[in-house]
Image 1: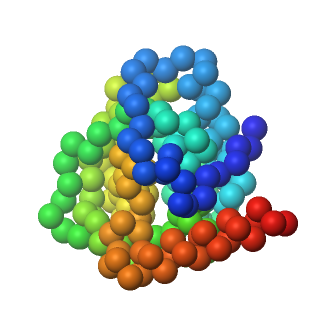
Image 2 (image 1 turned 60 degrees about the vertical axis):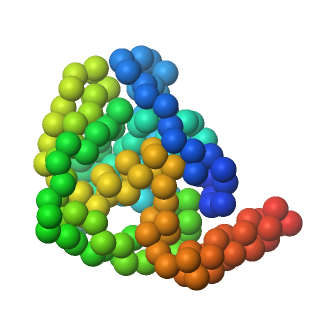
Length: 172
C-alpha cells in the first residue's frame, strides 16, 4: 500500500524514532508498504518517520541502471559502526523536501549493522551512493534532515518554499 509522505516542516521529521527490536508481521508489512511508496515516489530511500511512523526502520534501493536487478533492503534499528575519513559530496534530495537539492558532504564509506526482516543481525560496508543514502536515512531516524547540513540562510529559504507549497496544496 502506498502511504502519504510527510512534507517538511512537520515536527515528526525532527523527532528521534524509537527502537523496534525483533520484527513482527506489522513491521514486515510496514517495510513492504515503504518499499512500494519509495519506488512509486520515485526515490532510492525512505525512512519510517517520513510516513509518520516513529520507528527505527528505513528502506533503500540504490540500483538505478536500466534493466539491472533491483536490490530492495529494509534495515531495522541500523547503527553506523564505522565511517571512512575520506569524504564524498553528493547532490542530495529528499522525498519530504520535494524538488529541492543541495550538495552534502558525508563519509565516502560506512559500515552499518542492522536487524533484517527475519530478525537476523546483518552488517555491510556501503560506498558511494549507497553510503550516502544509508547515512541520509539514518539521519531521518535521528530527526535530522539533509538541509540541516546547509548554511542557515539556504535552509530557511528551502523551509519557506516548503511552507508555501504546503499552503498551496491545502488550498487545492
